[in-house]
Image (cartoon, rainbow, N blue to C red; front, side, top):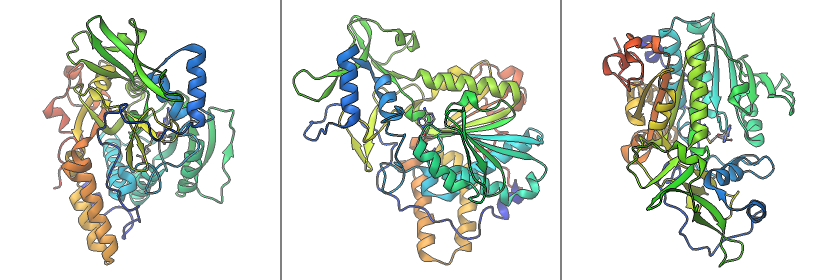
Length: 442
Ligand code: SAH
């Protein structure tokens, strides 16, 4: 690893990135109580009101799922919401160094597990394809290390619009894309560096095989159920039509217990909780795959370790947005509960983290990489952008402490893995995994 990082990976000069807005999605926002002075009747609001009138109030999870990924009107399906002109910005859109260090993490894991002759790089929710593009650039730069390895890229994406942008960013335009909307593999092509690339809507359609999985700001958009403790026990929060104001939605409590209550821990001490069964299903699938065929998963997101209560919030134009106003025009998100992800992986694979983004990136050598890029760049605006990007990613008051890294690895990957089964994290063994402890530089 020393040689790889010291010689500098990636292009000599920096890659241009968007100007950084002052707010990012990780910011906490308690929603639902804002005045409704601006509540346009969007097609999604009309659709939801019709649905509620026909079959009754809907869970917050159903609301999130409809608003974000409804195939006809979903927020994620037909727009590019990322970047300065969009609603929020993410780490890979801020700095190329982020993706480069993640690329090094995957190569480090590939080397540590015996340099298999092939691997799949699988990304869940790839946005504009910027992150995987930065990772693939590192793979190209380290071609001599990876030269005998067959790599393929697999993207799990529900958005038609974003998958088109990903294809533009990543693929070689001279090789026409194969499209088949009816197939689980709805698009296929070849990346600019000649690697086969395929698109899927669901993880379970990605071929099983030795894989490295990546999910950056993906789990936070999965639908959550919300619960409130009452004298009668846990009650689920639903969304109903406000009888006082026309064309307005409101939160209501279910009159009796609902099935999703089964996801709440028996010893839960909080009085409000959010649970995300879809995240559990995906973590179980990742864990089964990694236990069966090897590889690793790296999850990065804002979140907590089973401590926060009300994190469901909206973003529009880089501003916090009431989740019930103008649905379909704003992003909806909730903090990831890493304690739940860990429970879902337990017994199948080992997990590491969550650890703070600034610790992970520091351990991965962000300071060395920044210095290499600064030394190579004479352009003052590029240098300023690199420094601003570093501050945004690393500053504890910005993304540095709000975002976390979490990994799933086969038990065998961690020395003495057998003894670690069901254990949360053990420092001596965790120290073998890059990012979760300092890289050895000598
Ligand atoms: N990882 C990117 C984008 C994060 S935004 C980045 O960090 O820049 C969330 C991404 O997840 C988008 O690409 C969105 O279209 C995708 N997405 C949302 N819900 C999804 C689902 N249920 N299945 C697959 N992809 C989904």
